[in-house]
Length: 332
Picture (cartoon, rainbow, N blue to C red):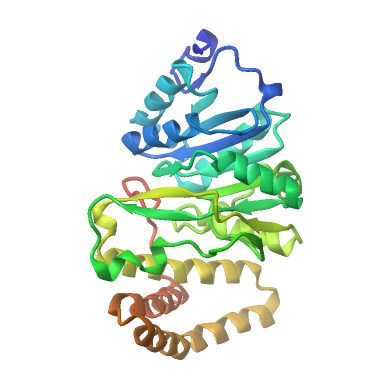
């Protein structure tokens, strides 16, 4: 499959597979990317190897407007005939802007696509991933479907970190769930976007992260049905810099900041804000109890410290201090 000359003119900000029939596509996989060209190549290879899936296309969102290494990788895959789809540059930098742009492009470009999926640019999908998520959505009449993202440590992880909860999925069995928590392995039916908008992630979470958690919280509050498919496996590359105690502690703190930001967004009136303050106060002794229980269960000080890190992040957010890992130059 060659690239259309009309789509590669100008400043090469967008490329599209020649001969692509948008009306024939039933599922679209959105892949935002930022300065991970080698990992993105592995991601796209896993999508090219999908089996049993309906007619799919990929939408790659390059969020590094200056370097565009990801766009170059996508161009090679689109032109090589292995993957149909489109790749483009989103100049507004940040996690939320990139994801929203990908969703909007997928919905507009492929009007017959019923299923919009997403994975990250440091992930590899199992061969039946698309088929399993689509099958579950249709069989269960689910609006949102998620699956596990499991770690693949680039270097051997210290034993104290290998089973840390920041690296492992929130659910562990197939079936209905109240909600899922991340866009790293998910499917949304088109009707979800008709309900919540074609750019559904809130830009206030752009640099903190957590726009996906807020989005799925709104899905739950809107009464949309979520389902989990344990067999729809995605593997995430964990670089050496993440397999460190300092990184997992910072990640725990960011989870606390995100939790508070989501709570604050959905609080109503003075009573709602008062409940958040009460939760801020209560979380400290609760975190100490959870840490003690985790230590007794795992004998792992780093795992036991996770509830304390989450509570510390929440208290720091109360004081106006938040991490912003998705600003330019940072990759989280």
